[in-house]
Length: 383
Image (cartoon, rainbow, N blue to C red):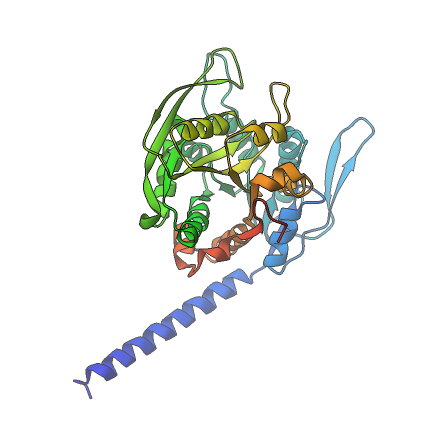
């Protein structure tokens, strides 16, 4: 019996299965320990979906507004000793200072008067993350001020989605950086295999090289035909104007994919798409983590998107109110694909509660489609 290799292999598999079952049971027990979800905004579809996926309800909070405009969050439940996750999104048309100020007040109340055990802020789109360095003298590095302010209020940990710059990580003592490149890579790879395309990954400007490389590492190798870059230089003295200096790479007859961490007015993305089409790309697809979509130079974003050479724009719901805007606007429906990443955020919260790492969490998922949902495909109806 001792020399029977089949029996030995069977025993090893049995032991591995029992160890895995014990570890899973321990993770589940830790996950079921008391925790609560609270939203900075009274009506937040992203927070509501995350709560549903975690089989929880959002904590009852009232935002009291006084006659002079002062606001005060009032938490209606006992959260003493609990792990509290504060889901902080920015609404459409809402000043980011309002969202940030409300978050700071909530965190302060949770620490000082609610006696919460541990406070984690879930910030899908981190405030002021584009202000991570100075471009001239006497400018603030505002994202560091954000980190200092919210940490001083009593935050223990923060979860953020696709930072504009990885150097921002050093501003926080404890954080999870949830990159969306694995999700975009999975979605694009499946599309490539379905349509038989091979794509060229394009960096829209010098700052986009890092994110392009992240996409390259996560996509299926057989789907990638090459890499390309657009060298754009910001016009001195203008906030929303860039000059294209050079396009490097071969996109002739290929599908070009431009990934960027955020899209505000769209100038960088649209100019990169135009250059790719000039170089012979048969189709250009943009993918962006944080979608703002505001107008500039006398045109609405919808007008700029319709006029652009971009054939499709894939966005996520880190700024969730924009999903409703897309589904209500035919011009946006025609060109925008919506990916809901609430399953990713819900799983990240569960993973943090059970002591896992983000990298392990992504690797453990047998099918990455478990981390996102397609709510709308460009040119189609909502799903």
